[in-house]
Image 1 (cartoon, rainbow, N blue to C red):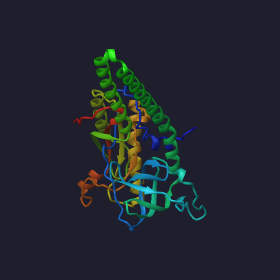
Image 2 (cartoon, rainbow, N blue to C red):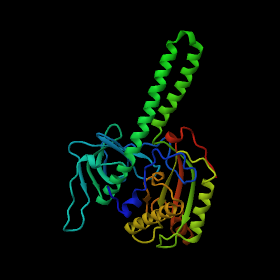
Image 3 (cartoon, one colour):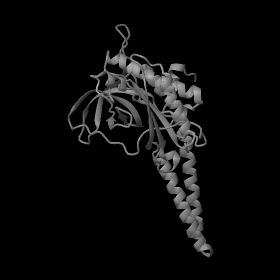
Image 4 (cartoon, one colour):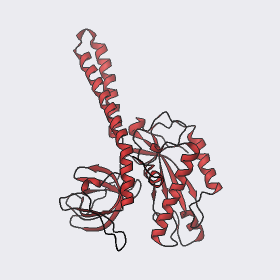
Length: 329
């Protein structure tokens, strides 16, 4: 499967499962351990609820509006309509099946809250470009996740078998107890790693700033990234992943600001990948939030300057690292 460069830069994504712990010279990071769940009041109508799919189940999916933000469970029903956005006057929307709703897909949902605080979807819309990005992400992540889960399950099964054999050996009762304890510890670690594949702890955030209307990294911004890269090389980066999030000030149109913030995040990713040869699996889904989530007041020149930024968020995946991370710097 060939992926064009634009999709590649958007995907450089969530391949945040199973990223080699031996790459101690690389950059990496992302998300949180226990996410807050958003409850939709029973009977409340929700229109054009936007976010990114972070977890997929047969008849439902979980989406988040912002990186590390509250999560909402969306239920699918036989009557849920799944389509792409319309493209101008002469090109209408295209109908898709629920199976096209993939992790990493940015979409928009209309629906009604139920008595469990979930959003029951009746309409789902997305851009076909975002669908291609999510499909490329799936082809990258799924094989890695499957391999990791298979290895951990096999390790757990072998340890349980060993524990059972030792317990049955009466002549080596004390040794059997010690081995069983060690086997249980290893099995617990394997379980924790499987359950922790979506759990992250923040390590460090590096912020770089841009000129008005620009997505070009300044020499100062590059120096900030280079300084952070030098620090990363001194750390144990086992299980680290990286999220790059772009922002813009409130000047101009929202659609233009969103595109500009997206280009800023991709400019940071391109610089890191090309200079430090960072594997794509170290990245989670890049995102541009436009003027949303401002760092300062947009009414002043100084405030707007602080909002023209990209945040490089270093995080550790607990499932891969097999331990609780510590924050640095």
